Length: 331
Image (cartoon, rainbow, N blue to C red; front, side, top):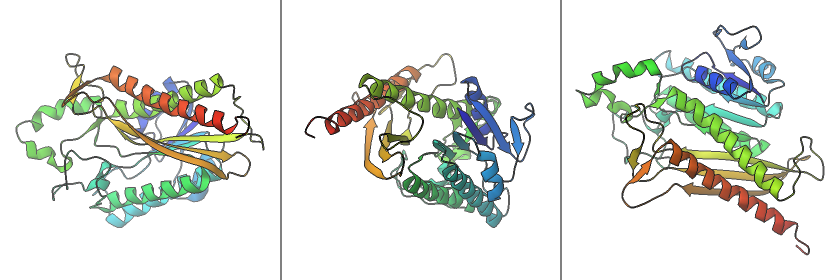
């Protein structure tokens, strides 16, 4: 697959670029700063210019949009909002104009009310909490979420937004002991963080898993998969939203599992469209929760993957059964 990663020279983006290339995808990094890769693998572009966004996405199958001013207080408030909101609009508009198959993009945990100078309404926080942006950076990310929802509605393209926490790279863990004596040092985001390697692995592995399982179920039912639209072809759009993983990979070899109240949840949004006109023929959404076994559940990479595969298999099987009923004689 031909994938454009915007912001691929940054802290999270470079790990996404690396993971996608390791999985065999042809990746172009689009950034204001060159990443040192061979000629043709990195393009310098200003995504606040719609024309440049249109140019760099031409010929791509998917885009991972990480380019942004990465935090509050790095630039003037208005400039942070202008750059982030405008570049996000341009990337989304270009993706729709070029009919890309998938858009994955980075929102932020800051839309939830960070820094928590005022305590959140409840904790642990999940996606049901009311958004409360406290900076122009957070507001720009919330605007991006609204843009994604509306572009997805109009185009039928799958948009996947990741409310990413404070990204840590391997070398950042050396500073962790300095946080232990004073818990208030990290209270600004309720002590949350995400490993850059997990960000890359989660988005690439989940996308592969969805494609693999849905293709398998449709092939088993005898539905041929084609690349070109026709009046006899349905377009299936599958998106995973509100992905909530309670126990990602642990950072020490001595600790391979975690006790949690549940093992996570995710929501699927599925649409069937006329592949020529783009008309929505059917739409469904469903949320699946991981295993629950009393007050605590042991979770690890293995159980997380098994739970995800189980939920996706249920969804794909449900689509196969729905198509069988739709095309049954007399239906």
